[in-house]
Length: 202
Image 1 (cartoon, helix red, strand yellow):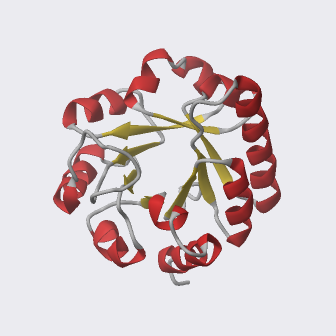
Image 2: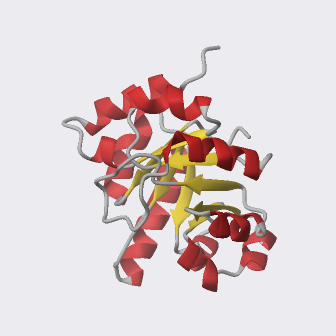
């Protein structure tokens, strides 16, 4: 499971990805919304190339046809995104798939697709967007870990370095981070703090 780093950065623009991946990021999701296809294509291709140079794993959120077309190797799909996704085409191309879950019905649906990881969120209250889901809490993380078995589990939502020990103790394999780095005075310095906090001592 070397591809699933314990620190999972999520960015909303390739410019931010370009700034942060050189800090030592090994796993990064590009989450693009409401852009023309030409701009989506430009940002995904640029992110792919940046990650290749720095040895990071790029995960493309939602835009799986473009990910296939641009030879990306990992996509993340929300529950709505799953409806139209061609899982067979993704698997044939060797593309890994991560899936979002919030309740047990969504988890059952996700596990039936044999994903490469399952994400649960928001673990804590988050400022990122108006969430229809209440904070899940660490007990839910523990329950999810029992239910997913060998499938890797990603925790997302309201995470800070101080909350990491609890998250990992509850069974999460990786911590996905958006707001804590986006809103930091120095995103680069905060990114380095996260990398240090999630590295397993040799």
